[in-house]
Image 1: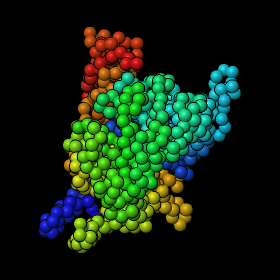
Image 2: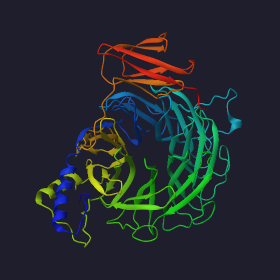
Image 3: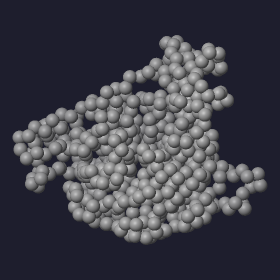
Image 4: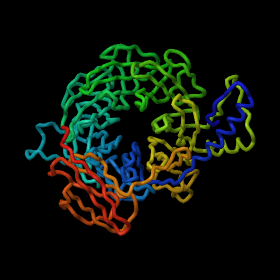
Length: 575
């Protein structure tokens, strides 16, 4: 059943049910696209780009088939797909070695490029003594040796997908990267889980199975600081967020009791575990939240008001630190706390038998869009007295259509809530295969993009058939993105030209907000002296400011459609 608010008076409940259903069906699918080769391609992250497009990131087993244009190098490789606002290809890139490379995150950098972050498992390990005399190590696209079973692997790309540098970081054991944030000084903090003892790049001992491991690197990939947090069992770090005080909040799940540097006991099979650190990686506080069952935290978010929202999935009933019971199986579970760690509210959301919450978007009006996926047949929502709600035949038909009570086992789910966690509407999107939503993001035109991995259903001839909301498939598993319109969100008008980032240090991108065939970009100083002039044919125009003194510059864009200009501020490096 759809998310509705229940009040004691039956008539009011029926009215709100009808209102909820009318809201739900105004959240239209604008378009959907599949990307991949003949074999398996798994999406893990997506971010919006300044030119109104998007960049998808994940890992691919496919060779040059389907709409993939490069062969893979070994096992799974990093694969990034840059597309425009309509989902059409701008460029794509495969990067990998002979082992398994899992690309978990993509981040927009200060100069308009991208940072790819994930983990790499080499087929063979190389010690420092075994490095070639010239210091050049090559394994496919990898330019650094493997440290252990799996290492953090970071690659810096420019705005057009060209590689600038890469870095391997790890110990002798298994180090899995799951999150990355951009720092105010232009560096980055990498967050993941480590099973390595003190070895190679790892400077702290292992406390148990897996520990939280955070590593600060500068804008060129050089190590600045690192720290580990954990108990005697498994502590899996899945999310990191920059906080308003300049520090970081780490979030994941732990089944460790007191021990190592964990100071609070476990509450159930697995609990939400938060660790707050300052800008040097030093712990400020930590907190355990959970019930008696299995509580898996997947993301942390600091709201515009400074509070924190913790999101994940739970099968715990009431008790311990959980005061909202599940309705069926595993449900979405949100907890809101303030900066002093005081709980503000918590809420559960039920869709199917197993519901996995993976993503969150905060809107300007303080509403929130949750994204995840539901596994198993949809479950009807119950009233407080335990009775199944009675709805009209039309409502039942609409409900069945939206929740897709079908052969598929997993669907994308988006749920919009207000700032107190109360549900506004929900939308389910899926095919007859398994659809695993990894990320939902806000788009600049007033909508959302839902992105994940979809498993295709084969027809009798061995090809892939269109089912449900999905129009096509490429291989066994594809990147699948769905553009969703929210009628309640205003569309952001496009500017003729804008520069991002601005102020800039060495590099900015001028974004042209309209289509054109040809034109010219000219960079001038405040006195009107022409410093650069070159032809353009694309809406993203890279501008190189390196070597110029700090100050104000003007970029003039003249095309066959119109002429516009934008002021760019060049500032000094913050490193």
